[in-house]
Image (cartoon, rainbow, N blue to C red):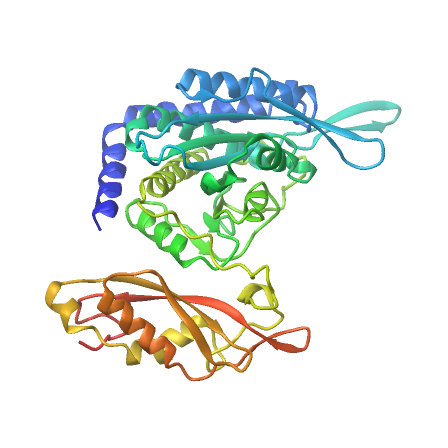
Length: 437
């Protein structure tokens, strides 16, 4: 509660005190996009002169913002074989703002955005060659602009961040996420010290189906709780959160390393990867808002005493392990429903609010993980985020007593799966699930 209040105060002060700066930042977002989508950059294809010009521009912006550059001028360039005799040449720009906590500054929140796009296409019409520029305004000049603004703000507020924040502008995302792969497998040695990756990709469209959303890749209730807290403290912008993936982007490189990820996006649209993805169609106010949201999310993760969970992945040792609900053909079901059905039909009707917790005014959210066995029984109930010992034990007792689920199925056979639920304890007579007191 204290950290949530602290985050709310920071966000409120930011909104109240920096109105002139906000207007300046909005113009700056537009300037970033205008440069990145200009004819001179020719669509920023991986390895092109346009991508190098974008890298130089980003480098200069980070320098001006006071971000410490970890890359040399021109970026950390790399070469990768991409089939046959073809070699891909691209680059990343990496900067950092060091955290103030002596014990946590060697752990990192990585915030990324890819700077490349599709380049140009040449058509010959009536014997005349015409160059078509794929400007990539939303994909991903919008994400780069948001990240540049965020980096400036984090650099100004470095004294507020316990962990260090790395700003990664990746090249060659359009060529199989090569830049983020290179960062994790060749450039950055201590990947176990990365506590989370936030990816800004296509954040510039609004209206209709292009609402603000966050994808975490897997069921990750701890991260969802962090996002809920940030959203509650952030007036005017509430994302929809999905425990799945949306589209291929640099967060996947981190996901495959077991690092928690959050893709911040306003989603795909008909102009994606076409000549119609132009600056005039962007909502610059939304880009700025999402930049501020990413700032608040990074601050929350950077300042938490405990590292955020990576969520539920299928176990690598499948002989003794389990699958995640998203990796099977048919997920385990409770009374023909999902985990939400399990909460409403079993957990909340039977869980009791411990007298000790009521007397002490203790409330909060318990996150429990458990295995659903091949026969549908529940086992291995553990608490990954607790409130008090009595509350946690009550949740374990009720989940452990669960009736059998309909087992998960994969390739025609029953399999073990791991899942999780969040059980909320609130001292309110109007609480909709009516926990017994």
